[in-house]
Image 1: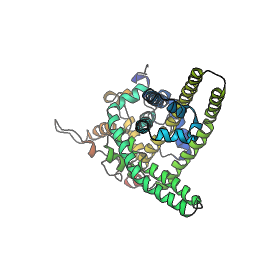
Image 2: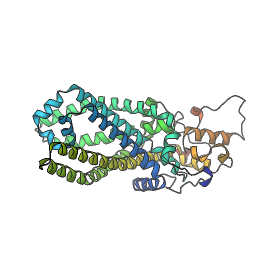
Image 3: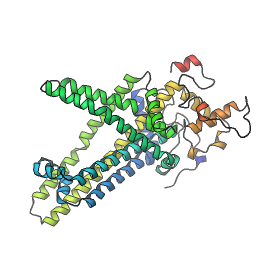
Image 4: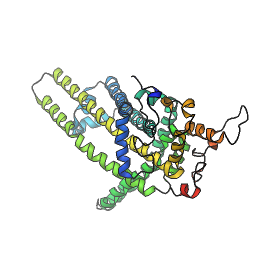
Length: 393
C-alpha cells in the first residue's frame, strides 16, 4: 500500500481539527474529520481485526463440525430448544473454545480501537496515516497493550461480579419493582468504569507506560472532568445502541431468509450449504458494522485522551511550539512522528533547553524528567507556560 513521502506533507496544526480544548460536539466532528483524513488507518485496522475474528469463528467451525454447533451459529431460534441447549452446555470442549474465542475477539477489537490514537494524534499536525504505518509506528507495544487489556478484564470481572449479585438480589427482593433504580444504576456504573480506564491503552501506546501505570494514568487524566466524561461515555453508548439497532435490521431479514430456506423442500445437503452461506454473509456484514463502530469509538476516545492532556498539561501549547521548531524536520521525519508521544516531547524539550544548558557527552535526558511525560506531575506546565493559566486549563 503506497504511502505519501514525508516531504509531501508539511506540518499544519489545526488543519483537521482545532488544536485546543474541545467540547462534546467538537469531539464528534473532529472524529469524522480524522476518519476522512486517514480512512486507511481508521477503517483498515478495525477491518483487519474483524477478519481475524471471522477466522476465529471459522476455526471453531472446523474444530467443532457438529450439526448442533452449526445450528446454534446459523439459527437464532435454536437457543429456544432446551434439549439442544443442554446438550451443548454439557460439551466442555465447546464451552472452553467459545470462551477462548470470545476473549480473543474482545482483545483484538479493543486493541484495534486503542491503535486509533496514532492516526488521531498525527491528524493534530494535519498528517495522513496509512494502515501499515499505524501498525509499524508502535508494533512493539502490542504485547503491553494486550497485557493491559487482560489486566483490565480481570479487574472489571472482580468489580462486576459483586455488583451483579447485589443487583439480582435487589430485583428478587423487590419483585423486579426495583428495576427502575437498578438498571439506571448499572448503566451509570458501566459509564463510570469505562471513563476511569478508557485512556489506559492509549497511554501504553503513546507514552510507553506499563500496563498498571497506564491504568493509574487514565484515572489521573479524568481529574476534574469525571461527570463530563461519564456523560460523554453515556452519550456514546446511547448513540451506538441506536445505530446498532438500526444496523441489525438487515440481519433480521437474513435470518428470516434462512428460516424460509430451512423450511423449503431443499435437499439436506443444499440446506446446510444455504445455512452456511447465510452465516458467512451475516458475519461479513457484522465485520463491516464492527469496523465502523471501532473506527468511530476509538477515534472519539483518542480525541478525549488528547483533550484531557491539553486541559491538564497544556499539551496544545507544547505541540504548537514543537511544530514551529526550525530544525525539527531534520531530526524527526513525518512518517514516524507521533505528536505528544514521549519521543516527540523529549526531542522538543532537548532542543528548547539546548541553548541554555549543555548535556555532558554520553548522557541523555530520561523521559521521566520531561514536562508533559506521565511521570511528571500534571500540575507542572511545560516551560514558558504561565503557571496560573496552565493550572486552570
